Image (cartoon, rainbow, N blue to C red; front, side, top):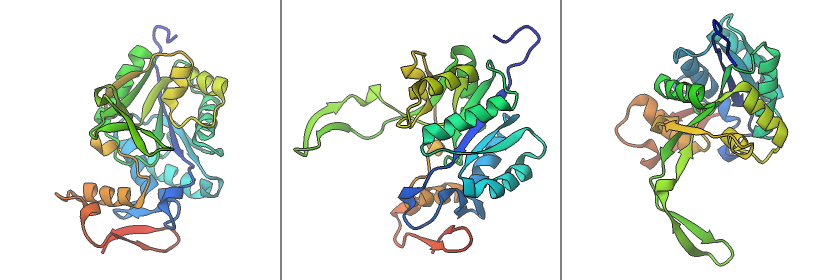
Length: 261
């Protein structure tokens, strides 16, 4: 527990070590240039600007260690941020990040915010909600309502089995906040590379996970259509670029550039 006179510190583990397989031939999404800068830089600057960026770990592919180190130095200066190499799965990458955080003098009662590097529009409001709920409950994630009707489907017969009450559903976003000792223990105990969400590790370890209001801007960039959406969002256009004719154009350089025709 945090003793009298101590302050619970807030750390980040930013995961940016994925394979970007759904980006087709566009390359690794973390380095695709959007709005004049790499997607990863957009994410890190947003984190810095939330006001809760005391220190953390950026988890990247081995080939990205040096450019990532340069980015972290540019954005966070001398704050205690470090780089570590990810694993073969997201869960393994998170474990690596949490262990690096622990080695960086983070205490078990500190809070860690685990965030997808591919969610570049995180806001201070969402981060604040997650932190307050995690401080109260030990674990908290942002969620947004499901807008579409959801069906269960017999995949073999290609027929509908039933309709799910979407009022009981929520789409998980990041950052997800946890007591460091609890989330590290949950990941180590499960050691399950099939995990795609850190809250699931806490659920399966028997912990309650609180939810707070997420936001549309918390969307994860996974496909080229998501890049179109991100450009639209950053430019403040009133219509979705993904719905316009022409699509996006990828200019092949040392790293990609995503722009409108």
